[in-house]
Amino acid sequence: MLKKVLVANRGEIALRIIRACKELGIKTVAIYSEADKNSLHTRLADEAVCIGPSAATKSYLNMQNILETACITGCDSVHPGFGFLSENAKFAKMCEESNIKFIGPSYKIIELMGNKSNSKQLMKKAGVPVIPGSNGAITSLRDAISFSNKIGYPVLLKASAGGGGKGIRKVESALELEKTYNLVKQEAKAAFNDDEVYIEKFIENPRHVEIQILADEHGNVVHLGERDCSIQRRNQKILEESPSTILDESLREKMGKAAIKAVKASNYTNAGTIEFLVDKNKDFYFMEMNTRIQVEHPVTEMISGIDIVKEQLRIASGKSLSFTQKDISFRGHSIECRINAENPELNFRPCPGQIKELNLPGGNGVRIDTAVYMGYTIPPMYDSMIAKIIVHAEDRKSAIRKMKRALEECVIEGIDTNVDFLYSILDNEKFKLGNFDTSFINKEFNM
Ligand code: ADP
Ligand code: ADP
Ligand code: MG
Image (cartoon, rainbow, N blue to C red; front, side, top):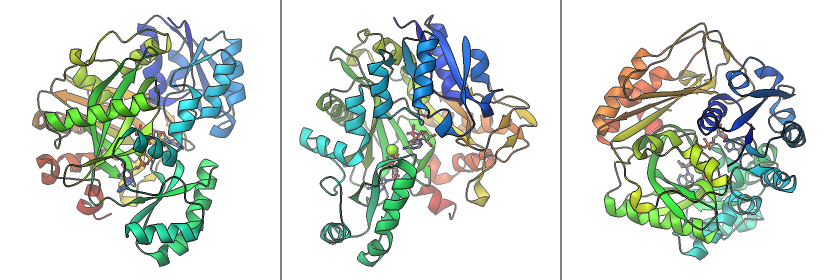
């Protein structure tokens, strides 16, 4: 088993990893930036090392410093969490070369799947249905226009290296494409240091349904069912649930099998997620693979009883999965709400600052993953997500009611949050009926 893990992240996911390590008897080293001196992850880990100034590029993205810290503190492994270096093939390679286990797939797989247009090509070859689009990257405006004219508008111009909902632009006509092509490339270059773009057919009113998989280093692969992440603002998820109201047993099995096919085709190992869009006819298409733990992993843990982070640690230790597909079953319904420090009325503008009053919900079936505490100051330079509330109940209706009462208990003063906004989603008749798609927030809240 791994003995000492460097947690290369911050916030609630750093705590999530530290907790799993403790329960498995693994030592932890937290890293923190100057802005995070007083963060909880620095206190809960066995050791904590300041890694650099506040700017992420100088701290949480500083590969050299992080690796040196891992070596000096005697870590045998690094857990990257999500965001930051979690899908950085170069970092995973550096770890491998320094004999530090990167808790995730090998750098070659990250490289392959991290480029969204390449991964689609691979999936297509493996026989997994993919969203119709360009065969790989688009390299000139002329190609962009001729391809889009062929598949028909609207299309999406997407950055191959994109993530976090960024680097996606809907284009309605050739004229618009002419205007935005270079702009999107420039934006992609600035955000991801990679200006490669590709084109996808815009799927009208789809559901975002993703499959969680686990693959050990001995060829065993299982899926842990789906998560419906259709409730999004600016292509970013804010509420997720499992099971999805649109899947029946047969579609679940079909999508699960496609996900396993995708995993086997790429020789993938560790935890990963295959993201699909499902259209009105219940046809599903591969969109991308996330080669890391995801924000919304707890909803799967709640209904499957499997601790995904512990499984990541066991897999990285070289252990075989201790269960097969037929051992996995699901119980009840789970919903997650992402609490963000932001103002939904000001176009979700982030709202950092000090928490002056705090009461987080609790009680039967309520799980809170957070790193904030009373008096904590949310720094302005990182992601605005400050907590996740996850509920588990016997069915969807009870889960919705439980989440509503949890949000009612929630008091966070001193900053703006999206708590009331999340409540109004749960209170929406269409949401309650399961009658929604990825355009839900735009349509229902006139965004
Ligand atoms: P999930 O499917 O786990 O919700 P997201 O795409 O929302 O994944 O990303 C999880 C976290 O990682 C978010 O904090 C997001 O801002 C960040 N993130 C994901 N991809 C990137 C990227 N390419 N560049 C910067 N941040 C990213
Ligand atoms: P990211 O890497 O930022 O997570 P994705 O490619 O996974 O980007 O897409 C994020 C979201 O954007 C999807 O969940 C979906 O709502 C929307 N989206 C992406 N591609 C399409 C498409 N071809 N048609 C319609 N919506 C799309
Ligand atoms: Mg995605």
